[in-house]
Length: 446
Image (tube, rainbow, N blue to C red; front, top):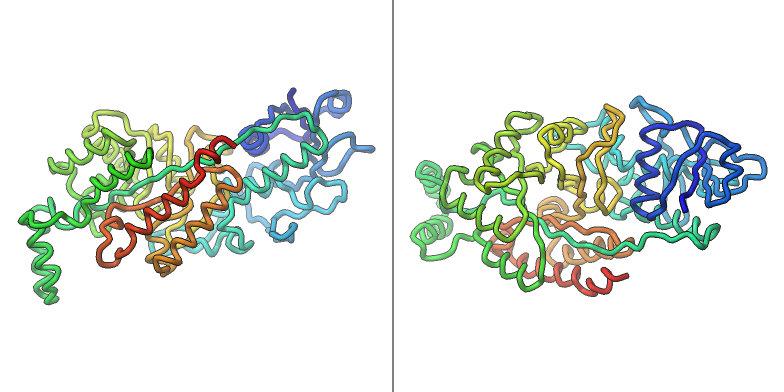
C-alpha cells in the first residue's frame, strides 16, 4: 500500500529527496497530497511534512524548514546541532517532530552538493576543498550519513506501521581503476624517451637510467604494466572492475600514451574484453565540452562501442557545469564524486543517485556513483603508511557494510607495481580486497 504524504507545496526538490529516501532507500511507494481532508480520510500509512502538525496529528510528522520549497540558490544559514551521538543540520524545535532536525532538507543539501554552488575557495586544481564541506565540519565525512538517516527513518516508520515492508538492501563492491599512464617507460615515443634519459643524466639518477634501459630492452617488465596481475586477481576473486582511461593529448598533467599508439590501442581492447571501460576526461578538458567529446570519440573508436561512463582526471569537478557537459554528451554514469585529499563520502551517501541540477531545478538522467577511498589519498595527501592505510580502508568498509551500501574503491595500475613510493602497496591492495570480500555472500543475502 502506498504511503500518503501531506505537504504544503509541491516542488522538484521535494519530490527528488522523498523519492531517494522513501523509494530508493526504504522501498516505500508514496504519493503526495496538498489536501488535509484527503490526508485525514486516508486509511493507509501516512506521513506529514510541514511547518506544524495538525490538531491531534493522526500520523508521523516531520517539521520542515524552507529549503525544499525554494527554487533559487542562496546562502544558507547552516546551523549544526547535536543528534544522538553524532551531528545534524537544519534543527527544528517542535516536540511533535519525528526528528529534531529536518532530515529531508539536510539530506537534500548534502546530496545535491548545494554548498559547491555557493562561493568557495578552490584548491590549485579548481577543486572544492573537503575542509569547506559541512560534513567535514560536522565530523561525519567518513560516514554515509544519509544512508544512516534513512535507516533510522525506516525504523521510526516501522514502529508506527509494523506491517510496512522495507527494502532489503545488500552490500555491493565495485573495484575501479584509473589508467593515467599505462606504462612508465615503454611506448612513449622517441622524443619523450630521449628527454627522460637526458633528465636522468642531468640529475645523475643512475638507478632510473638503468631501469629505463632494461625495460626498453625487454630485460624486465615495465613497472606500470600490472595488467596481467589485475586480470588474475579479478578471475580469482570473481570481481567485475571498471576502468577509466585517459585519452587526452599530452600535456603537463596528462601524460598517458598517445591514443594513436597501436600497443596502447591493443591494451585498451584487451581491457575491454574483460571489463567495462569508461573515459577519464583529461586535465586539459576541464569545462571544455568539445574536448571531452573528442576524447570520448577516441576511446569509442578503439573499443568499437559506445562509451557512457566517466571519471574526471585529477577528480576535477565543477558543479553543475561538469555534469551538464556529461549529460549533453549522453554519458549516463559518472564516478568522480569523491575527494582527492580526503577519504569518505563527499555527498554523504554510499550508493548510486541521480544528479539533481540545482541551477535548472531538475533531476537529470546522470547517475552518480560516489567512491569512498583512493590509493593516492592515503599515500600522498594523508601521508599514511601501509598499516595505517589498511586501518583506514577497514573503517570505511565497515561503515558501508553497516548500511548495506556500495563501496567503490579507486586504484591505479601504477600503485600495483609495488615499487619505489608504492612499496608494499600491492600487498595492501590484496588485504583490502580480502577484507571487503569477507562475508560478502552473507552480506549480499542479508
